[in-house]
Image (cartoon, rainbow, N blue to C red; front, side):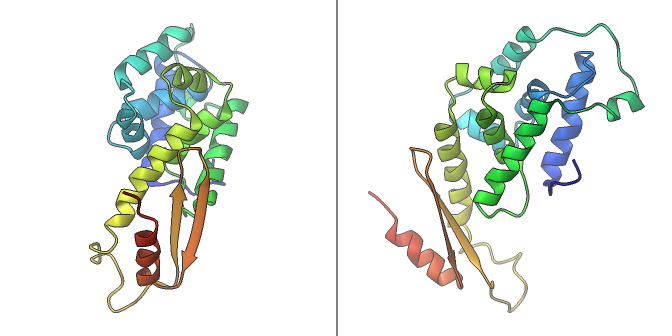
Length: 202
């Protein structure tokens, strides 16, 4: 998975997915293991989006476990680290990376993984999320709402900015309930904030 630029939380989640596979005695990492790891990462952006959409994280995890069959071979040590990703799981990561690129995000995070799991459409994870009433448009809108909240805080969050240095580019991504995504780029933070103000709706 070295071809992707994952956030540290995403890297940890992938390791936990291997652990979920080990717990179920599976010799592969599938979409079900990715979802189980996401549901367990309760403080992550992806899990937060699901929680905000009314998804019971524990009940959903139980549903995944009820669907899959436990393997008979117990895995230990180095064999877990070498578990291959299924073709569907690989597709999920590709779709997650596409979501990150669409929004001009430099790293693939757990929120992008959530969208990738849904967009894949056929794996166990997608099926369970659909059963829970979470479609791609709804999830994308909630993820963008969360990221938008972060964006609103930009005007107050100056501690991490290089001292005396203005950003060379500011990206604004707008998500709509129908799943549409509009991206705008500005040369100054002031222009970006002014644009956001024009997009406010009562």
